[in-house]
Image 1 (cartoon, rainbow, N blue to C red):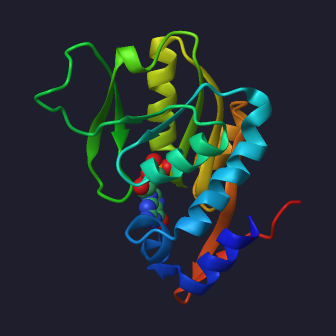
Image 2: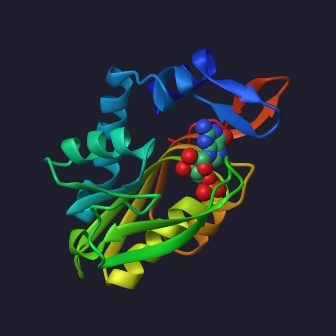
Length: 194
Ligand code: 5GP
């Protein structure tokens, strides 16, 4: 997606040789014009799959999930939580996720009532690296008997194995930008396919 690619090149930062920092427009400060364009791009890709809800994980995925859900006709957004809260119902479904950025293992959880059996689910997240977060969300859907109609990602790190593995498992994956590497602090983007 051209607008996101341009923003990554102009305002994104490469940290070391494997971290892409997009805090200026996605992860800390949000460029809302770009955000809603991203929502439209995912909606165009996945509309035919007839998603009934968008699923993400707190916190960074939520804004992107809302943009996609709005563009898909104001379907609901459900976000998995990373910690148990006092007000949470006991009846939760959980899956382990190893965090690439924090190097810790978390459980993600959703109250079962918000992920009904048979519902058509579009998963949205900000980054795809090793694919742990996406697989954790897919795991929650499988446990609930929900149908994963696709996975929409803002930035796929093409030099990590998550994207390849998801595509090979037959998941309909759409990454709006793919980073091929970081060279001298500069982000190298993969040329757009279409
Ligand atoms: P994965 O689970 O695919 O290994 O990593 C995806 C998750 O880790 C995303 O939800 C994102 O929060 C975080 N992440 C992985 N790589 C990066 C990165 O280069 N930059 C940022 N900002 N987050 C990342």
